[in-house]
Length: 495
Image (tube, rainbow, N blue to C red; front, side, top):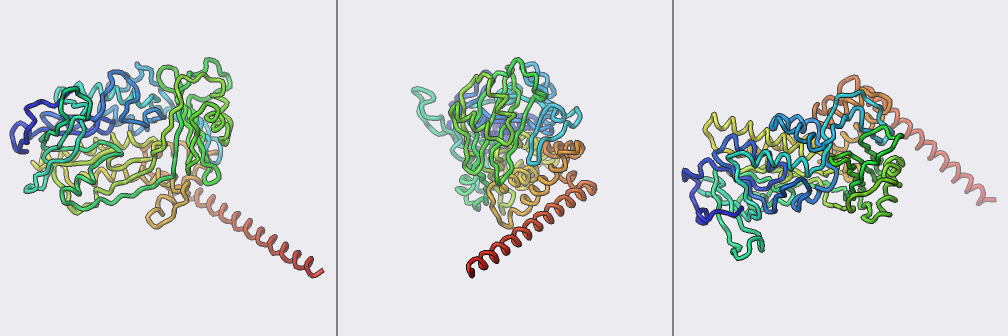
């Protein structure tokens, strides 16, 4: 869909036709969910997307990581069901697999295999393409939503007198429309949401408007993926799982892998390496990397399975937090959500859930403003969005900091959390109740405080103390051996 010629000129923000228009930049999950929420508050919502949107489920150019495992956490599933009550049944009808994390996911962690933990903790296992397609169908069917594809946003339109954003400048992508000039158009609106993902230009747009530079925190464990689809083997009597997770054990082993079932009776297999130890993209190298994992289970599962896709690689996986919530000034009429504000290493599966929770925070913000008759956007909303992502950030960066070995006062909380969780998972190997508790925190159903309940914290503290004492004893013995060896060497020298 192209931009109407009636919008070619600059239109003031207070014109009646635009007073209740919202614009969303980016049609990924964060943009779609923001659009859905905004359609309940504005007369019209324009969704601006630089790429084409496919008419069938599948990966698209604007989501290069779409070829890899995407697990929607339980909190994300419940949030999406609240936003779209029919979504779950539609996904199941399309072939999504109901997956019970307590019973059907076999997980080999740093300390060994996690135990069967009962049943009843079920999420949808599906490709990113199918999930996004199902959500997009529902959002674009809403009568107040209009989508502009083949257009990229080149900047924000500011009203400097009112210190607010009044719209965006958009441009048709070169070569997309033969015979049509690649001209710029200002599209006015009362509210603009940037959900354009990792490549967001919000920081530079704000700087161009005279606002302060945005502080960023980046944690990069140099993680890379290789992923491939396989037909699920018809006969495998030895397999007691639907999904498989094999983790590394940093710092000595930085390799891991997963198998999850998706629609079409397929497995999506993703191998992961950190510290620049990237899985290869050729057939033999892919299998050799799988064979090198800490247990052979994943390799044995795919060794004789039939691949049904090429091997695809992806290496842009850094965690990046843009601290918009710390800004001294923030323009009204503007918000940044999703990966544009806080992006995670995708291996932890948090991005789509955070996008859903951010949309809920946006909805709550707009309900409050409606009662106050105030302008949308502002630092209060950015702080709410930052709060939504904070726990997930600590969880994800704790693991990656363990792999990088990075130090610094700013990272102490994440490092402590990761060491605590590693010890807790050591206990979980023999205690299904602790494993269930960990899964519920990982899936954001319960807060991290649940892992610090007195009965659990005491056991973890005892385990940590025991490990520390054992390490100290080993160090003393090693030192004693070194001293004895040195003394023997001196005696030998005198002789």
